[in-house]
Length: 458
Ligand code: F0G
Image (tube, rainbow, N blue to C red; front, side, top):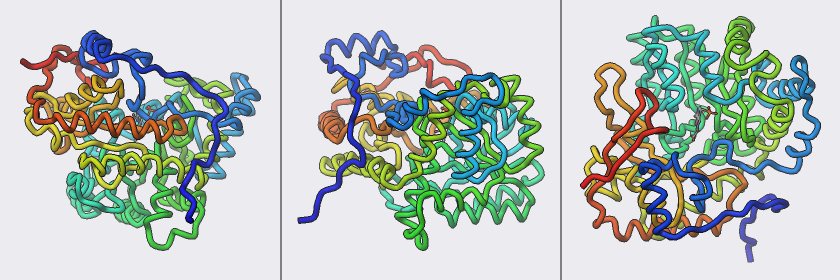
């Protein structure tokens, strides 16, 4: 008999979580103004709000924490991180930052000016926020197929080279760089192929422009290249990662994802002049160039995390768990962005809650229903997140209304996946009775989803 698959680790430390009752959850979600970000974590049983900073560190990472060097300047922990970045990613220059968006803030302060245009494949919301805050524009060149949740493609996160070419032909004077996001979070944790990364590089070279990679989930992307793209099966994850970055001039990193730490980020580049210019902003916004908002112990854990996070066995365990959740949903016929992504399942709320008008936020409504059903917290990737158009102030309605169920790294077991699937099935079974959603009663001028206040529509 063929042996079943099992995790490539065992558990040495546990954290208790608590179930609650439906009446408790009804009270709590009302107090939270139907915004899942406003819940206290103890009001949540299975927390799928994000895979960012929510992973479990390994014994090796905890051991590295104990030898963190907390010197203000020139700490050994800084050099541990520098060496890991050079060895694994290939960049000579780097700046630590407290997380990914801080890396964006620092590097974009150097690279972006008003009216610039930044083409990319579904810029993440903080990335777009940092672009629009500088009165520049993000143009999404993701392939059209990404919007069809039922279409199975191996690299559904790809940038369309055709769309990119068109943007470049029209606007290249205004383009400071092209941005590739791996994996493509907004499109469902879908990977970008090596062929696509190379293709983007060729377009960039034609117009003499740099390429940046927003790298939050670069290792998961490399796993998909190894397992899905011709010519890469025999390579190690680390070899694939190295190759990916030969096509980039710089990267921004949220280490809270694929470097498996609870906080941290960085900028890495091969351009000395960018490093020098960004250093000024880093000192201003983040901290001195050898710590940039991170403690020595966190830099140590990050260096180890980069190594562990680019090991095949770890990635296989991780990505197969997400796929397992997808398989359970398949059993119940629940539609989600296919195939299953690297870090999350994106449930197709538009298909499920088709009776809820889009102005009443279908994905948010599904998120609240799933919380009420079983204390499971996902996150809306729909019209609330899409925000208002900065010029017209009109609501933007994206093609997709998704409820993201992000799976923290090394934190939950497949029994939890079974509970999530069963809870979603219960909501799915009563989908036709859900006809009304929510209206906004309070919203911030930018990135409103974090603090939005909602009320049920009557
Ligand atoms: N880029 C991508 C692709 C991301 O997914 C994120 C964060 C960032 C940049 C910003 O990094 O949070 O460290 O400042 N994504 C988290 C998420 C928040 O839930 O998807 P950060």
